[in-house]
Image: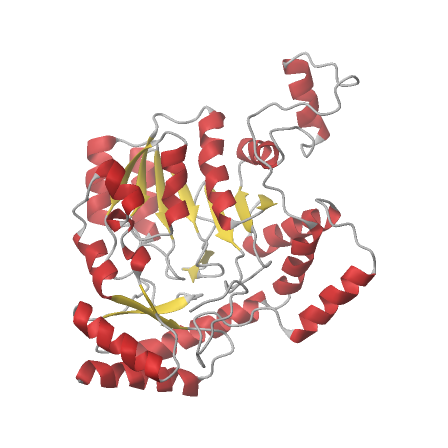
Length: 398
C-alpha cells in the first residue's frame, strides 16, 4: 500500500525509496527562509540548462509532470506542420499517459506488441504495422531502464520516414552503446515523479534538438503565449500577425496550457542533479546483481550487454498467474513490496479496449499476466538483493 508521499507502509524493502535525503530537506528549508521567488523564473532556466549539459541535447523545457511532457510532445507535432498523417504507432508496454494524448488529440493510434526481452517495441510487429499503416509518428517507451533495440528502430525510421517520440520517463540515465536514453527521439519526455531516478517531487521535461519544436513547447507550456520565446522569435510572430505589441503585452498565439513548474521544484531538481550519476550507477549495479541471481528465470534484459541500465524496478516473469501469486505472497510475508506488471499490456485496459477492442499481442499479454516488479533502489546493497532473490527462488521452487 502506498501513501501520497510516495512512502509505502508495512514494507521493509520498498519499490520506491526516499530520493530526497535529510541534507536536501535542510537545504530546502534554508531556501524557504531566504524569501525566494516561487513562480516560474531564473532557477527553472538554470535547471533546464544544467539538464541539457548532462543529457547532451540542445533544448529542454521543464513542466509540471511527465504526463504534461507527453501531452506537449504530441501537441507540438500537431502544430509543427510536419506530420504526413495522424496515424501513430504506440507501445503496448508503457504508462497510460504515453498513449492517452494520442487519443485526446485526435490521432489514430495503433498498438504495437512488446519485445519479449527489452519490453520495448517488437521489431517484427513494428515493421508489419509500418508497412500496413505508413504512420507519421512512432511513440516508443524505454521501459524501466532497459533501452529498446535502437539500431533497428533508427534504421526503420530512416526507411519509413516517421517522426520518433521517445518516452524515457522510467529510464532516465540509461546508456546504450554510449548513447543516453532520451537522445534517440526527435522529442523525448522524462518524469521527475517522486521515487524516480531524479525527482522534483513531481515534474517533467521535454528535450529536443529542433528549434521549431522548442519554440512551440515554450508557447504551449505558458498558455500559448510568446512570453518565454527568444526576442527575435517573438518579433517574427508580432510581424506575422500584425500585433501592436505596445498595446497588448500578452498575446496568445497557440491554444496552450498552464504546464509551468515553479522555482521550488527547479531548486530540488538542481540539488538532485548533484547525485543523479551516483543513483544511476547504483541502480545499474543492482540490476546486474539481480541478473546473476536470476540466471535461470525469465527477466527483462537489455540487448547491449555493456549498457548502463538505470533500472527503476526489476521485472521477473513467472510461469503463470498462480506462480506469480505465490511469489507475491512470499515476498509480502518478508516485508518486500511488489506490484504486478499491469502496465505490461495497455491493450488490456478499459481506456483502450472500449475504444479499439482487444488487440492480439502475445508478448505483452505474457508481461501483463506473469510480470512482477521487485525493488531496485540506489540505497540497496548486495545483501538486500540476495535476500529478495532467495525469497523469489524459494517461492518458485515450491
